[in-house]
Image 1 (cartoon, rainbow, N blue to C red):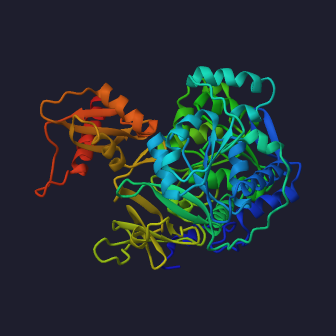
Image 2: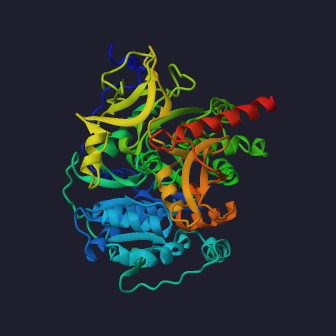
Length: 566
């Protein structure tokens, strides 16, 4: 225990070493559907699906995929918000032997094209309003089939009749698509025959279930190869950590996007593993979250700090009964202590901070929820079967408690590697250890703290944003000579994106112009909220831009503002 001091904090209910059933993710759904056939699996805007209906729908979908030529190992993209179709597609792809490529529905044409080309996806499932966006880039990719889903398909009457009009008003478009050629309607597929379980043999430890895209130090997205073992073991760890969960009795609030690895594991896979009900929310605004919590009485609420911040600052929050909430693990960004305290007061439940990466399926550390020591400002202690060390950047040797170095992690949830990127895989995975790029330290008690990111990643509202990607876009603007993008403190989003721009001599451009330009090429959450025009940027003697200096300047400005307010 000397090299794992955190184990002494484990309550009796949590075992440091777990037994893992070597069953695939799709087999989990089959097992749960056989055990709880009539239990509600999904609640979506008043419409509900039982586990039997979900399982049968997934088999229908799998059969159709096989009919249009999907074979074992083929990549199939899902570009959906939190809807029943996202569950059905996910498990249907796996039943057909495919690899799921999770794709953010907010992606622009440029981002869609890159991810489809990089993954080699042959088929994509997307909402009808995204169809025109995909069609514009289809020729650049290997996409052969587009499966179109509609929100109204899983809405009860009369919402299913009214929704298309709401959608047209909201997005300004109405897409009409026919089921023919390489375009397929999800609703038609669900009317088709249900195939038997194809019983495709799965190598639990080696076969890739998901390609989950993330950014890297270069800013170019990388496909993280997550196996059935990676995702199943991390979900099993989650169940162990939340040891008070009652199988088949919990209601999980599905507010985290399922296309994000954190939502995929703690909402979708966790619910299937335990036979719990998920209440899906495609757009988690504070008022909708509060209404849903009051009406659906969820007990588990995995979320991001921005969600909890939005709730505790909602003007009429005292009108809502939030007492059903029992346990919450916050991820994707640092959780402010005052937010944790206020949320626990309002709900009577427990909210703790966790830590993880896409490369770890995603969770590796968390604070204890019910019994044991919780340390404010700490990411907590490693989960079962998860080893962690702080290593020196110079010597790569483990550092003693209190010294800052790079956090490295080992465990069954650590990725297989990066898709088609052997060199970057070698740099990140060494002798079974994952080098996170995050700088931190461990205290004498075995609690871990993150102090900075070696990478320049920005986390805004739980989304990972990579400065280089945004800079590349701005360098395409004819007026830009130099640009650097940094994350600056933001009380609501955690961090927000700021661009420092040096214009070419004689060139003129405004914030509004850059904003409009950025929105054409980047998802909305990546577009800078702040701009600053400068004559020059701080640099080293060899001409490298001093990004960290700009970050420090912003922190000082923030500090001075807070001091003035005080």
